[in-house]
Image (cartoon, rainbow, N blue to C red; front, side):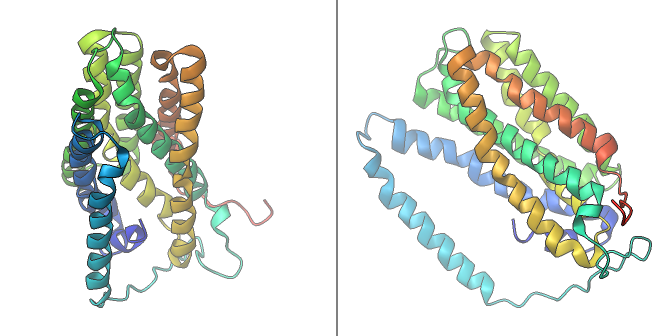
Length: 284
């Protein structure tokens, strides 16, 4: 996450979404493989206790720590801040809160991460329902990897497409597609409900990196502060799944998927309207 603004600033601004999608495609590799590993270690009959996975997870933590040490030894080039003379971004009188693409973008990150995590977190329980797929927990966990795998494939595709098409409308169209797929799943059962919800991952793919680059666009010397706000907004990944769980307990899991639909509606607004840079007057 902390490298996002660095990647966005490595080249031409109009290609920043393409670069960040390409980098984040590799993030999805772990979430694609993870459900298979977790399903085997945690849900298989061979694992009678959750404590059996402590050693593998400890090993992963050690490997990540070693990787961080290796990366820390390599110097990275310093990227000069880009001055936006039309907005005076980073000047003494400027503030990140005056840039509406950032303010609305933070909301976009909040609802996107919330929707993505909410869907992914409930897929196993969803596929176990008799009117959806009636799978066992271990079998359902393997299908979850398709949801995250779709995000990985979509980001590679998005990295290529976003070099040629504007990012804002692309975000809006992808959010429309994701919302329609979730709605289809809500109003259907069986294989249609199952595969439509899995296909959401493909359209989720470009949303996070693209919303991020749209949110920090034109911020100049305020890019660091803006990035911090955007990263903090991922707390939606903790709040929105909790809200969906509350709804699932009271109105049923199937209907509770309306929560992500509402999130995608906001992202549609952001892609087509809220992402357009505009600076509020100093009197506001």
